[in-house]
Length: 379
Image 1: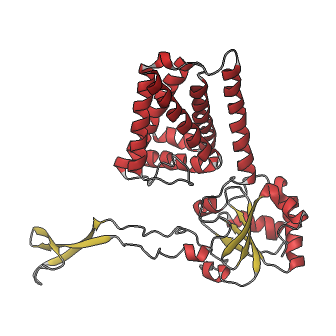
Image 2 (image 1 turned 180 degrees about the vertical axis):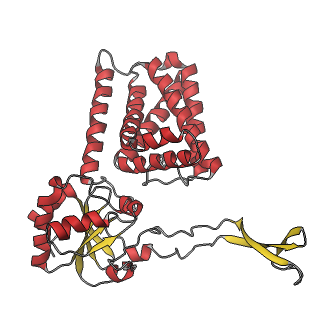
Image 3 (image 1 turned 90 degrees about the vertical axis):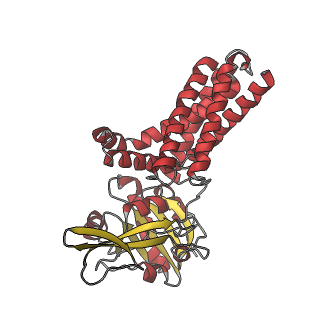
């Protein structure tokens, strides 16, 4: 029994720490996933007012959830306050199982984001994992007396405290300086135009059409191979998904750049030869003071290098006012969906160095000045 409890303890503790760390390197990813849950639940009428409220605080909840996951894993391994920790683990695991079951059985959310974007797993795999973890935690509660501290005195508590500080500092760092590991389609070295294409091995969804006709007071549905004669009047057509396809969504499927005339300029802009810069700015809500000086240096360096600099934003009016009307940078501004920008640029704003459609480098607003200063973005 003691050996079994020890093995279960190690498995649960290590998996909680690993799962938390995977999300801690990109806490905004979990933030956006939480917002997706809140948005779906609010739209479906589940405590709409509450969902709208918590939506605005998703980042705080994300940081707390990631920190709690790692700290509980550390506490379990060290044996600190085992009664409290095992019960918190049970509550958290019940909550995770509820989320993954909702993803699996509702079909309204593609993934739960349990291992972030770096390790995507299917809803059924996630749900199975959570059931196993739940059973292991219940087993640990049953064998609670065998969960003994690894160290004496205050060492376990000190390790738990250090883990809290470390994971919060890690999340603060990556929010300011971009994720430690970029697992998204817009990472350095990727060809954005190629990733907008349908995968070569894509299998499309298979649909069947049915047609609704009416004759006198009778209304019937017909298949395409058994349509009625001309005495029937056509009413409507329904499309039914017969077989779900596979791998039929491009890795980049919602990224488009619209110019000032309202024309989709994505292909034209990304197909140009030579180097150029894309300055992603989701909105102007973030204080411009923190990045305005770095941007001036970037703008001057781009002019010296004779490399185009483009602004990509979801808030075109505000961006045009700041860059062109107020500061006379006279820069072309392209509009892009805010969700696509959040995927491409985790920090607001973020600089891309491009060569044609290929990403050569990425820097958050906090690193642009240093990159320019050290000539890291010069060719």
